[in-house]
Length: 277
Image (cartoon, rainbow, N blue to C red; front, top):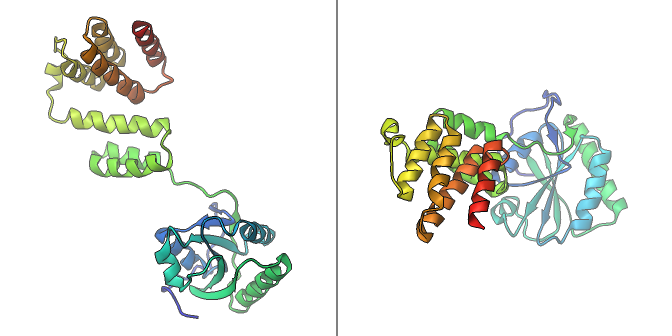
């Protein structure tokens, strides 16, 4: 067996609080993590394509759960992650490979009877024991990183570009997360107001939607969310159709920024609805 990468010795690592799913979905980072983890316990790597191994995965999952954390799985989609499959020299799906002390070992190709899969797993655990790889982990739902907290820290540090980049990734995973959407609007506000004289902006008297928006932004910076919303609502009825649409869009952005469940937002949304109809 050839070593894919130099492994860190994790044999003394305790279980701790982290939990691992029976099967994690691989990416470059996850693969590196599991290669290192294979110094502590054996890893089953399932190579699949277009859901062609659902029954095999179900059988492996059942056996992994029976192992109570002494063995876990990693799934690699050879269609979406061909470079990872190539690293193992795998081109056929489904295929199953073991990782032990950073080293890959082919186990079998194609679906197999449960009895045969169980025997292979037992042999893998025996080989792991003979090589001193006898650790275990907590099985359970995979814990998601606290992306919102990380992004909030970047925002508080004024690192808006990195915050925006991390936020874009987070929203791809959770496009309807209201906290992330609020952060997105917060970053946009901070960028808009970066060079604006706040004191002058709150004194703006204009019917122009962009000027109205700047005044509402400034009021928000001063913590006057209610006034920021009313500044736009008060001009909505008298505006022409084009400017109405701009004002409405500005209001919707502020709703997302302040928070859709906040009482002042609920009241402002109701007022806007009554004006529309």
